[in-house]
Length: 379
Image (cartoon, rainbow, N blue to C red; front, side):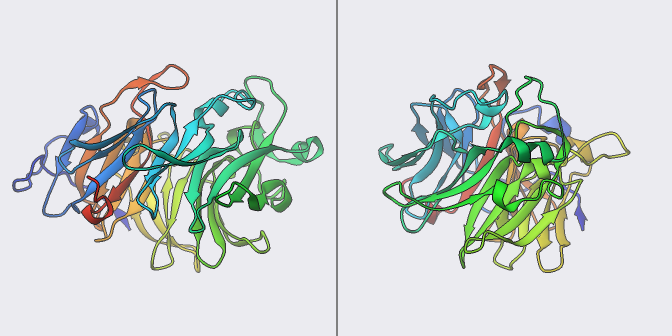
């Protein structure tokens, strides 16, 4: 179903209908909407994607209640692991800092576990680490890395366009698992499991990369949920065989991020929508919940005015304990909560504008996370 959002007044009193459209509201920053009767109450963690070098926790009033200060730029994002520590990527300069033009935007290089007090408890370094990392119960980590695609295989990969920086080397993803001591205990290589003719690049993607993985999540039963932006694919990998147990490809699902396995077995996805057009002209984003057993979409959120909800890059989504959904419209730094019927009942726009890795003034947010008060006892 296509859910159309409504708006709610700012503050803790009775909700009021806001006369502003979504487009007008995102011109403001900080807390721009809160219906306390319908919004789930808790805290939101996010890391501005710029030179601020901080991770913040805000309350429902939009006030900062906890802050981590980092020595380096955030490696896109951080979140809390099961031990209650911040689990994050950090951008470090090393021998792999200049692979291709867009690489510095999502390169990490180091994974860190940081206590609420800011003490670095654990690190793992991989110059090719990028985008995502997942804390494992054994104390180690599952994360995304890169490797070079052999030239003969790269020539067989269909699609994409010639890189603007004229570099001809192509890279593809490696999913790596390490233990607490940093020993590599499992890996999955895209070049061994993808077909260059079937898993073709979207035409709008540069041939710097074949896959451009942007999200991983460890599931039970030795499965891994993955998102590969450049080939518009989300899937579940069996760690024992490396094969896909489920694979969903759709030409309009352009640039998708952050698939999440829900308790009902469905997968929640932020569909950036770079290939989707409204009236044949305007791309726009959506969030949808898909049943892997049938590939049927069982829930969907879009904005009433479609192209006012759009982020061609980054972004994330989270189903909350009470049934609402937290959405991070990353390019605009907009974080908001919607009800199952699609009402916007809480909204916050990142007010921190600083230069990003390319020097552009930005308030982008890669992902945001909601936590209940019980999950953040240190606040």
